Every structure is written in C-alpha cells, then in structure tokens.
Image (cartoon, rainbow, N blue to C red; front, side, top):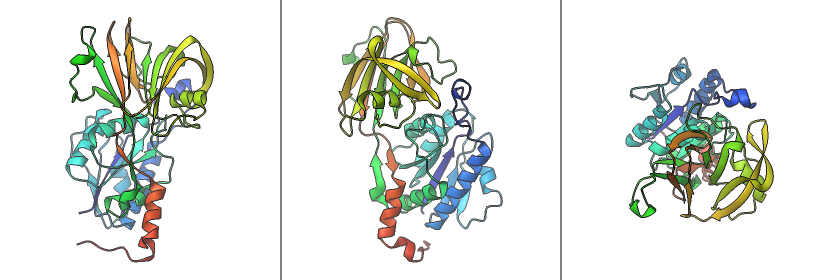
Length: 343
C-alpha cells in the first residue's frame, strides 16, 4: 500500500523571535489549509493511506473535517505529549509503518526533530517556521504531488541526501579517544550548530549574535536567513559544493553584517574560519558554562571545561526536490494518462 505521513508542528512560527525580531506568524488555521492541499495532492497521484500526527490545536482533525477524500486518512495512533518531541516520535512511528514519505510543516527546528526519527524515509519539508533554510517555500498542492510521486515510486530520482552535523558532548575528564568509532551522536543539526554564551537553555531560540563564539554550518548559500547567512555573507558563496564551514567569532575579527533572524540585521566579527570537507570535525572547548544551539534553538548545556565535537556528516536525511519529482513524472507521461488504481 502506498502510504505517507504528515507532521504539522502547531508551535512552529511562534517563538520569542516574534518579539525580538520581525518573523512572520504562521497561523494554525493556515496550517490546516496547507494540510488539506497536501492531502488533495497526495490523492491526485495515487497515494492510498495517510497518517497525520495528532497535536494540541487539532490541525489534522480540522484538515480532515468535510474534506472529500477517496483515500484513507486519519490521525496517527500515538500518545500525544504536546511537546516538541512529539515530532521525533511521530517520525519514528511513521518510519516503522513503512511510509514512503513524510511531509513536514515547520522550520529548521521541527525538521531537525523529524530527521532524528525518520531513518531513511524521504522528507518533503514545507516552510512554516522562523528560520527556514532546510524547509522549502512551496505551494502545498505541489508539495503533496511531489511527496506522493516519491511515495508511489514514480520519482525516486528526485530524492537527494542532505548533510547534517553530528554533535558529541564530552565531559572535562574524557578524551576524544574515549569516543567509540560507532558511537551515536548526542544530537544533530541540519543547518547550524553554535556555541552560545549562556548558562541555561531558557527560552531556547537564539537571536543575540554577540553571545556566539563558534558556528558550524552545513550550508552557506547567499540569501539564507539565520546563522547560515553569516557564512554566506562572509564567503560570498565561494566554497566547494557539498562542504560545510566553521566560523570562530571574536571582537578582533572581520565585521560581517547578516540577517540572523527575520528583519534582524546584526554585525558579527569573524576571527577565523575553515571550510569543512565531509567527515571533518571541529573540537570546541569551553572554560566556562555555555549552551549548544542547533538550528537556531538552544538544546544542550556545556559545563565548565566540557567540550564538544561537531562533525560534518554527509549522510543526513533524504529530501525530495519537488520540482524534480514533478518533472520526472511529467517526462514519463504520468500527467497525460489516467492514474492507475492499485488494489
């Protein structure tokens, strides 16, 4: 059976950066509308079964209400804790059910959690968050069509592998040699990992670039928002494809202006940098407490003399190129012949 999962984060696009910057607010009613259009796109290409993550606002239930569908669609049977970890657990359950694709509604942070649970299931990320480097600004009907084509095996060539940052946190008395070669990371980041001069996770979102000492990026394309824009504006996009970037920030460095959050231009000072090839790692040591932030949100606390190993891993989540998916299907004549009905 051709199946797809949908994970819509009701909290995406609503963090504290709406107060300290000028980020757009993605209303949950609009997310309901997005899910409806995704469902109609999935149905149009022959998907037979869809599961939607339950959430506090009821995005999935409202999307299904009075929507004429021929396919089976329902909420995923899972305990909803109404915390960010619901996205990771939902992705893991969907992967266990063998879905052909997971459609996500959220920003970089939402997709990071989904990537921690989805395994090899391809993602079709729709942007509804604050920092939206990993997810795409795309019409939901198109996203649904692309996701369905991949799930039905008609556009496998449109799936590519995105890099990620594997994060290892070691205590003061541990050495890098103590880390087993096959040790799973303590956490991951899809776009950026930063050392933030703060003792506690607190409000999670980061916006004050003066508190950042080190950044590792998986990408630095011009036009990005968030911390990756610092790397993009510093190197002007002149770094090898498939590589990452390490930046050390200090007052003595070269000034770089960048949009670190929507509508929030700040000047940082890049004192050192290094282009990272796949597999390269950066070791960061702290002589005072700090936190590690991933994809714009504070996640892990570092105690005095703790250190972190940040490694660029080319084998991150599988991601759909929606335009490529539709082009592959169109070239095969899919849109000019009746959609086959599976038994």
